[in-house]
Length: 142
Image 1 (cartoon, rainbow, N blue to C red):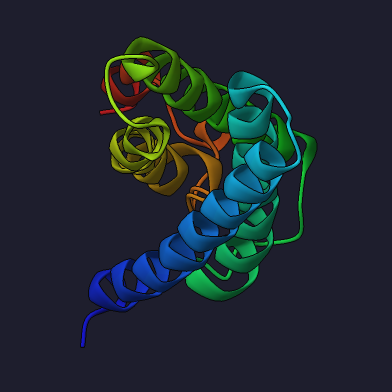
Image 2: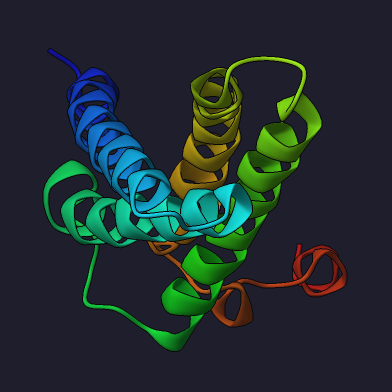
């Protein structure tokens, strides 16, 4: 099995655990009377924290957290949060409460997978750009 396929499989497992945790927190918070948007946000945050830890450690075997990685992760989570809360709010009153969350989770997941794989947890470049010759330098020495 290729490395990408293995990562994708692990990402799906982690995503399922994030989804179950997010949904469980959302339902629990709705049951205790929290407003639906706050419940959606807190549920999302619980899944996001779980996802960061498991994806960084297990899925992508990423190097220790750096400021760049944490900032990228937080930006991706903000995008996912906005998608989740936006979809839940859009569907609230038009469909059963859980339908909004059920629609929001896959949309946010696809966007966040793409961004986390290509940006947050990407492998560091083998050769930092500063060590590579610019096009002008390469032509001058050719």
